[in-house]
Amino acid sequence: MNWIYAPWPWYIAGPLIGLTVPALYLAGNKSFGISSTLRHLCAACIPTKVPFFQYDWKKESWNLLFVAGITVGAFIAATWLRLPNEEIQLNPALKQNLSAHYGITHFTTLLPVEVFGYQHLGELRTWIFSLFGGFLVGFGTRYAGGCTSGHAITGLSTLQWPSLVATITFMIAGIFASWFIVPFLLSIKI
Amino acid sequence: MSTNPSPVECKNESSVSEQGLALVKYVILGILFGITFVKAEIISWFRIQEMFHFQSFHMYGVIGSAVAVGLISMQLIKRFHIKTLSGEEVRITPKKYNKGTVIGSIFFGFGWAITGACPGPIYAQIGAGFLVSLITLLGAIGGTFVYGVLKDKLPH
Image 1 (cartoon, rainbow over the protein chains, first blue to last red):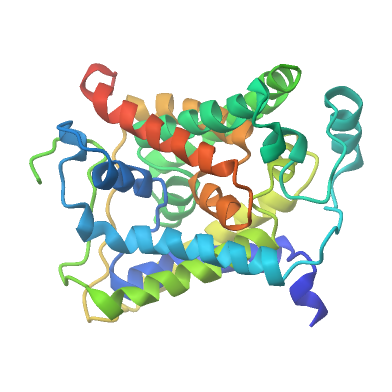
Image 2 (cartoon, each protein chain N blue to C red):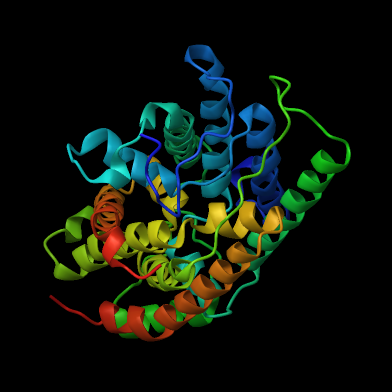
């Protein structure tokens, strides 16, 4: 049973994620895509007359149930299938850089507590990384018509060239941001 | 409700309407997916920085092998005309290209690097107990809403 507690390698996780594409098609002709749930949540929760949100979101309830499942699955894995205080096996260069320049010294949680810990909700930095970062994710994915699941995984699996354009673009943008924007935001000390 | 001229039209491809217990299968698939997300550390902000700094093969391996397995399965479905559980033909929604595909992806790439999460992992981070990710989710819902409001004014 050791394998279940140890982190899973890419060659187990990748194929499992890839199988989600045919599984959802065969389960009920559903196209695997997660950013759409953000739109359904808007349509379901925000009273608005904006035409973009005037549709029968209940017909898409499978999508919301799927992400509810993701939340539950993540809870199960984090609560029962993980050894407590186990250090994540990260590249030493990354750890060195984060601890030397940005005060990030804990590597036992999947997210840096110094940035995403609720203890730091009084700091501007935490809000920039969560609220502002989240805003870019929501705005960008809807503008682009998909995210990693809809474009990179489903779109490429079904040989759609717009998805290849999207994937290349958000990978390059991510690389740029990780090198030049994230370090600047991390250095905010308010 | 279907008069929306959106280039990113919401679609429910199945003509069979599913309710109640028929929807449980999506919850189960979601649970398996969420477990995989956490166990392979895909929801980790650290892993995303590693990927964008070319310091680890892990995330490239995950995404690459996911696409390979997805591609092979979809080709098999096509080749052998495999039907859905309710006996329908599998229908693939075409992704349409417009300027938003590029402009939107730039915004998304920035957000992905900052939050360390694409939309799926946001839900998984919340489930894994990172409550600040609820704020990330609120931001993402807000971003989607602002897009919906500005849609006709944005270049497409």
